[in-house]
Amino acid sequence: MRAILVIFMTQHLMNASGQRDPMTEQEAQGYFHLFVAAVYLMPVFGALLADFFWGKYRTIIVLSLIYCLGHLSLAVDDTRLGLALGLGLIAIGAGGIKPCVSAHVGDQFGSGNAHLLGRVFGWFYVAINLGAFLAMLIVPWLLDHAGSSAAFAAPGVLMLLATGVFWSGRRRFVQIPPAGQQLVKDLNWPALGKLALIYTLIAVFWALFEQIGSSWVLQAEKMDRRIGDAELLSSQIQALNPLLIMLLTPCFSYRVYPFLNRYIQLTALTKIALGLLLTVLAFAIPAAIQMQLDQGLRVHIVWQLPAYLLMTAAEVMVSITCLEYSYTEAPKSAKSLVMAAYFLSVSLGNLFTSAINFLLQYLDAGARLSGAAYFWFFTGLMLATALLFMRFARTLENRDPAHTSCR
Image (cartoon, rainbow, N blue to C red):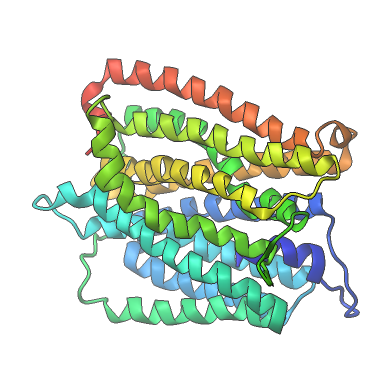
């Protein structure tokens, strides 16, 4: 659904009278990142439900149904009211289940096979991105050929089907009961403080990464997208990210990481630091492309491909590593809560990008930070963050090497 959100808001949004009422590009980018921020803020709500009251399994079932209602709202009402209601319900549902699903995956593994967690989270990530890849090809096509109702309804119907399948396995899963008040006693506050510092710096990564769905799509709208006799939709280009995830995740697990381990001590924090540096290079590419577009030159969409490759490689090193690191550092009774704390970094990153876009729309700063300057601003911010993270990681590893090695 996110693949078409910016295009829907800038081209297909209607008012109550049935007339087109589109948003400006900056307004749409602002609301897009505000929505993503809400999705990644709601894991705190879902984690509290899971770890305090319902347990992970029941929380996933209930909030998945709320998610489906959000898609129903988007499918039947293409006004700003329907958009707000639909996105609100999806944020509650999708955001609420995020920490529970990833933690529930980890719960299926005990002491005998805990060494497989790293690879399991990698394949879990592949599964998510297989769905995303297919959706990013099909949903934009549905929007273009069948309208917004069909495009928003299709993911909702599939999510309802997935919820039914998940419910059918209720007697097969390992289900950890909620901890209730014991949760507060089990929390390791120094460990949480260390994770909070890491997550704060990771938030900048997400401020850039999530722009694959906003500024990169809007840039693609202005590029030559013809491949032979066909023309790609600007929102379909995003399908490169999940496709590359499926290719790069096993490649990194079985080839890249073992190779790097021969030359450096490849800890979890080292992986993340390398990923942040790759993000700098990835975002510099659309900045260079935008410089050409600002001069009135026609640029082919193929020049975005290296940016997607580098950004996806960075995602493998940052996101998957953070998932595993967060799960292994969390106490057993607070897995969902710690996962939620990690997802807050995604929310913070999107809140930052949303705020920047709203400020650019309403303040004079928009003239000074438009076009290529917008992309170079985020590139410079990422470089400063990567260097700061490297210094922090080195200090942390020297202080506590046993808890920073890869598991």
